[in-house]
Image 1 (tube, rainbow, N blue to C red):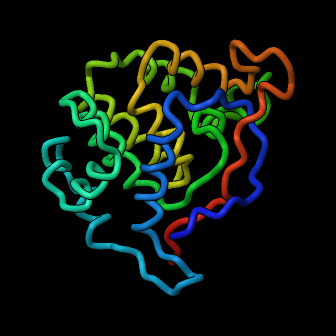
Image 2: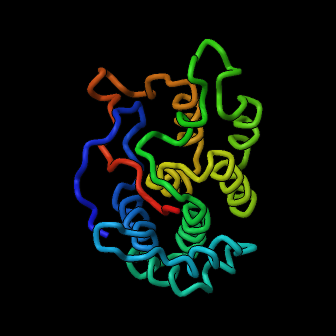
Length: 203
């Protein structure tokens, strides 16, 4: 699928920690989706295999993951685990959204937590997961994607999977409440990079 520049919604997401990584995962994910423009069908068999994976070692055994691994490069054991985590999670995304994932889960009215798609308590539980608990994080993020109906920001999820640090968790908390990201010095600095409009599986 061609990653053509298209105008997307403005957000308060911070710059990605690793834009090339996030873009590579997005292109890989896009290649597994249906493309109405070229009439290419979705690779449903591969997506189903990724979704059925019971752990990160299962993900690594899938040929489509090996293709992603070759695209990303920089082969280290830690990076392999993080990439498998990203692949496992984004495989459950059916429609890509340009909105930061935590903002999507947050309250429509920031003064009323009951308007949130996901309760603050449930988000706190996810944010309490340590960076070293890759399998626990995989399960939690997949549950969030399912909770969101399969609509999520693929780039955001990929970048978060690679760098599930305290900085990332704080950024999620600010995005959830639609607050300006730490370090933003102006309204222009707080704008996210424009992304394609939602795309993904249909039918």
